[in-house]
Amino acid sequence: VFAVIAIAIVATGCSLFDFGGGDLMPLSVGNYWNMKTTVKTTVDTVVNDTTLFYGRTEIAEKVTLDNEKEAFTYKSGTTNSSYSFDTMGVDTSYLVKEDTAYFSYDSLSQTTGDYQGPVKVDIGTIWNSDDMKFEVTAKEDVTVPAGTFNAYKIAMTDTTSDTMWRWMAKGKGFIKMYSSKTEDSTHSKEVTTELIEYKVK
Image (cartoon, rainbow, N blue to C red):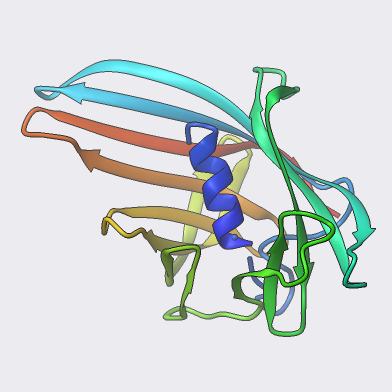
């Protein structure tokens, strides 16, 4: 689930856990998360360009896969500023929470799910999924437009060794994501995705 969400956020311009009291990715039909991504480009220490993107993820329905496992239909993609999906930018996958791990399926007929991460984690937990390394590094308060949340901070490192940071709150789901990259001696780019509005059951 971790990698699924990471990919979805990156795709919008921009994978989950049980901490004993609530999943970091609450899987109930009707849940949704509306997000705003800000891309800030700096040239010679001067902010040269700021671009906004909007995105949404939602749990649309509960289905039964061909392998007879129950799954939740997970839709994610770009939207307009009113958070209506752009029909050209919506991805659909199917999420299954098993006893110890989360798995993602690309279709109802996929036989074996793709490992997304463990169900239970703590600070220091490390796992790998979809060519990315995940590590829970801290638990801290983080403030976004949707409110202030006590969230787990997760470092996500890809094959290029670039690190993105994700904040997830138990019982709430995705809260924030941040990455910063220096492209050359004068150019840098910061990407911040924040939760604007959500509904969880």
